[in-house]
Image (cartoon, rainbow, N blue to C red; front, side, top):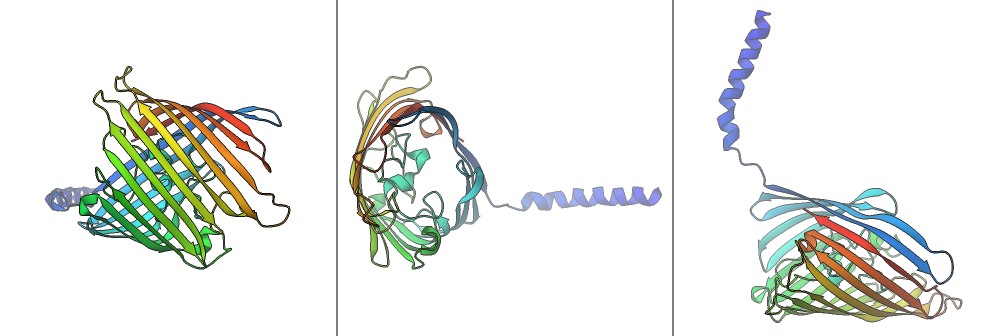
Amino acid sequence: MRSRRCLLVSVIVFLALSAPLWAQTELPKVTLGAGLRSSFVHTDPDAGKSNDKFFLNSARLYVNGSVMENVKFMFNTEYDGINNKVGVLDAVGRFEYAPQFNIWAGRLLPPSDRANLNGPYYSNHWAVYEDGLENGHPFVFQGRDNGIVYWGDFAKGHLKFAGGGFDGSTATGGANQDVIGAARVQINFLDPENGYYLNGTYYGGKKLLSLAGAIQGQSGNTATTVDLLFERKLPDSSVVTIESEYANYDKMGGYDSHYGSDAGASILGSYVFGKAVGPGKVQVLGRYAEARFRKGASVTDKAYDQKTTEVNFNYLLKEHNARIMFFFLNKDFNAVKTDYWTAGVGLQIQM
């Protein structure tokens, strides 16, 4: 008994003496976050029965930390609702020495179109990646690929460049093992956008006129996009946004593996009313896109067109961090596939 008491006293004394040393130890700074997208959707095809479903579209956990002043780490996960599994979204070593010189390596978004670089959580509309055009690049998981990228902001963020190499085998399921080269150049004529990842809207937080072009290449095959974003906050605090994209997936990526060419364009317009309604603001949004699928893999793969129309009526509680989005989506095909429309309500929460 006496020996146990002596041991206990020794431990207490050790902890008391060590406390000041622990207090002087600076641990790496770590931030935690999370995101959720969930929805109720009614689907009505031209052929077949309609159905109603609840979806857990996405659930994410975010971890970011600083190893030292210029070396950082990012680790994000994503719930895959199709397979009911959690996968590695981002796992990135970030070497950030100056606005003009940054190296990221691991699993991340390659240089691509704005729709991919802002992702669903920072997009302006709800039904992302449904039009046959947005983010048609090859990827291993949720637009990401394994590789390395250099990116830099020049002219105080008015000129942005990114370029890198990525693993072709994982992105194409082993169909092509050559490295994918990717690059993006962006000009911001009004306010700058700093950093690598982007937004589809800033809800009036920036005055924007942005024009960018991106290309990915592998074994002579290419994926080329051009995107435009205009946003302006008006004197009554309302916000006008116009977004457009042209995409051409030439034997690389695309939305239909039976076709070597997937090309087309989209345009989006939105308006946020300046006067708040309760704790939030109201936004109306419309979007239209046309995609053309050509160069079928066989003679039985008939060329076809897809026309996609989307309308949103959104309630913005805290911009991207809390919004309720009522949506209508209509897809028309002139061949091959069946027309259908969906309508529903989506909830997005981030912290």
